[in-house]
Image (tube, rainbow, N blue to C red; front, side, top):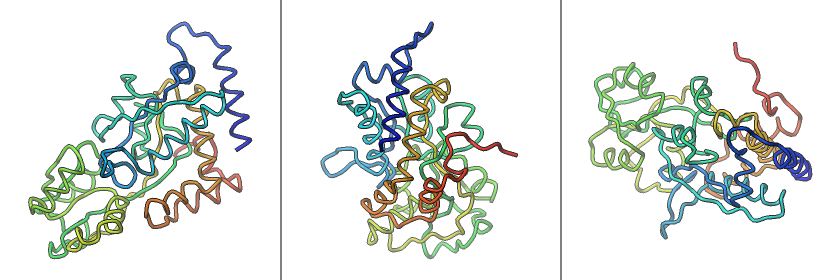
Length: 291
């Protein structure tokens, strides 16, 4: 924690001393307004959801609040958090448009997305792709999707690669709540999505999903990136968020949050905890070159 605080103080000192010809620095804006505006999911329990009182809660919301706490701790001021719900189809646009300062919203870290928003490295979580299907749907691998109605969420990259290209009749909905209803109503026999979302549902709502199973192998494991605007990636806000993610892994905070929210421990989080405590390349703030 001392290391993160000292880095943050240094970063903020740069911010306050710098002048810009165009717009103010995002981190300076946050401190000036005493508010961090974050894009989060409300349709992805338990990473982001509404509780029985309508409040937005979840693992990613805990991460956002911790980031705001660290910013405030560095400047001796409380930083308010404004949570802005996003979905897969608009989360990057919200960043581009300046409607949010940061985005922590289950976004797979893909090369094409790094051209649109500033995907912060290292990543903070990871998931694969699978089909959650009725047990009697005769689905046991991706080749068995041919001709079957499969639900998907708008804006997810694997609707084409692991759905349509496998012959599935993709039925696309704006978000997870609409997919859930369609699946339970029988309008689809399966749901193509992140395996992490299915595991969480099986753990937290076993009775509701007793007739369903993760029917295909889990493929395409892709880490999740927090994001800032593209021009902010190497700016103070991007660098401070990268340092914070390293500390989340190093301290075991993300593993603790998995336990808090009833998520089975994942090998990827355990690997990152070890990597960040041994200085492995997976836990650097500089993305390794890709082939």
